[in-house]
Image (cartoon, rainbow, N blue to C red; front, top):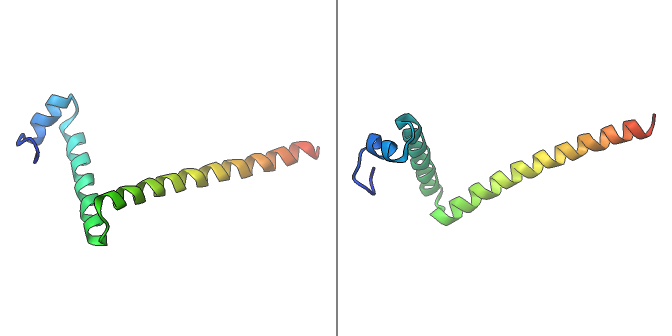
Length: 79
């Protein structure tokens, strides 16, 4: 790996994880860094954007669950 000078297999062995798993993680991180660089965002801004997108998705799921709960509650109340 770049920081340690070790191969992906050595780092995976050191961490006790599958080499393919580590390679996938590294690949995803490199792609995210390339995307952030291409978009002109700094690393901290790209991280913040990713965090906000995750938070937005979670809030949407919570909203949908609440909507369904209200529908069920109204159905029960009107019986």
